[in-house]
Image 1 (cartoon, helix red, strand yellow):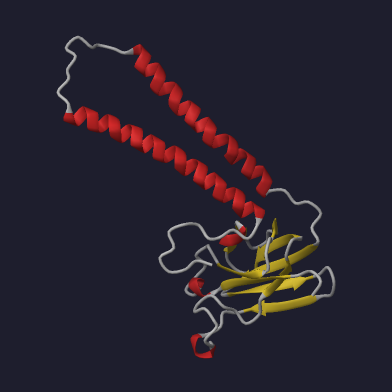
Image 2 (cartoon, helix red, strand yellow):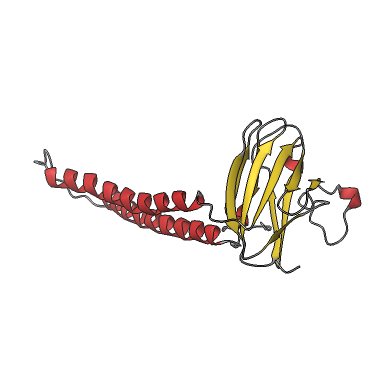
Length: 218
């Protein structure tokens, strides 16, 4: 869960989020190196008095600054393509959960075992206790087994929403008339918080998501 003054990514609760964090660090390292090199060259240009009266062209320099950006983009693109395909994989899910976005709450359906359906509303401020998080806790949590493949089917009943839990690395649009799917595996027992990530009206900020990851034996 995001906390006050958090400047980094949330702690990962799934292998997908771990891979996204590694890719973030990989890309950030490349950007830091580029920033240092460009800054050093700019400082050298500003603070020295070297001149070259007869410099008309520099083919070698042009070749270098054409090839180096291309190589840099390849080092960023290859891990990115790998992640795109990993995020789209769905392999033998243990459980399938359907969630539907409404203005402004989520409804969940468990159809694998019994026909279990419930709505999940944000807990109002006047009903909160000392252990609730303001604007994040809900009255009915989505319960999922950890260390198990979970498939989410996402749709909407009115306008476009987006079902998002950052610590799982999951963000999928809920579109009326369309059924989107994603999958994930939680690696620990925990409470995972998220929010709608698509502006959907006046109370867009008040439709949080809470997933409770528990042992499959419960």
